[in-house]
Amino acid sequence: HLQNVGFIGLGNMGSRMANNLIKAGFRLTVHDLNSDVLEMFSQMGVPTKKTPYEVSEASDVVITMLPNSAHVIDVYTGPNGLLHGGKLLRPWLLLDSSTIDPETSRNLSATVSNYILKEKKGDWEKPFKLDAPVSGSVTAAEAGTLTFMAAKICNNLALAVSMLGISEALALGQSLGVSARTLTNIFNCSSARCWSSDAYNPVPGLMEGVPSSRDYNGGFASKLMAKDLNLAVESAKLAGCKYPLTSQAQKIYTELCSVGHEAKDFSCAFHHYYSGMDE
Ligand code: NAD
Image 1 (cartoon, helix red, strand yellow):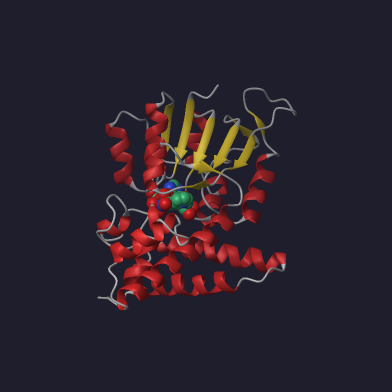
Image 2 (tube, rainbow, N blue to C red; image 1 turned 45 degrees about the horizontal axis):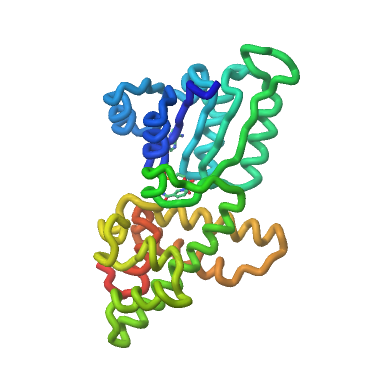
């Protein structure tokens, strides 16, 4: 039943996830606003569509991998969106892998549950919309090792704080005369070890294949991290939780975006904020 898969949002993550689905033998139909990326898929022989609705018409399952809530709302409910065209849908499963706020996600699931399947037209045959955000970098998206989960906002809160903590510790250590490489080797075999130190180190040149080694390009954009921290702050307020570190991290990422680093990988906090080496 899974052969015809629609994929919308072919950015850093989505393009790699879509490639893996193609490799695994699924028949893909894709859409993105970026015509360059559509051209790339078209040259690989993948059918491309101009609107989400056309993707929906061609697919049993549709996956979305978009930047934030507004884009997901647009792709679902905008003109020529996935839900355009009344109360009948072809896809039986709509899977949103974008990291968005829980309320938008719930609202869209409720909206989809008012639809029925086009081919069946039975009251009980409703399409499903699942919230399936992912954890892992673009490397994991390429390797097919992403973790699909709930709780994404909490994960990224912890990630932002650990990246900033590692960056601050590396900056201090270097100022005290210890090289970033030595510090990293020490962290990685002691209690400071974490993903930000041993898999996604923020110091340029220390690790291969991570954004810090390609001028912080092509990873998880600072503006997306700022968005997730905003979501975490809103969720903490609603839940009545304290959030001192989230709030500090939110301030740092908001500042990074406002000085022009919004498209750079979030590990650029080390370079631009802590190491004092700003252009
Ligand atoms: P990205 O900005 O690289 O890609 C988003 C793509 O969506 C772009 O190609 C853009 O053109 C397209 N798009 C935007 N609006 C659209 C619309 N209305 N219709 C069709 N296409 C549209 O973002 P990304 O890094 O791939 O991240 C996508 C999601 O995954 C975000 O919610 C992010 O928080 C989450 N995420 C990212 C990473 C990472 O390491 N990059 C890791 C885990 C989760």
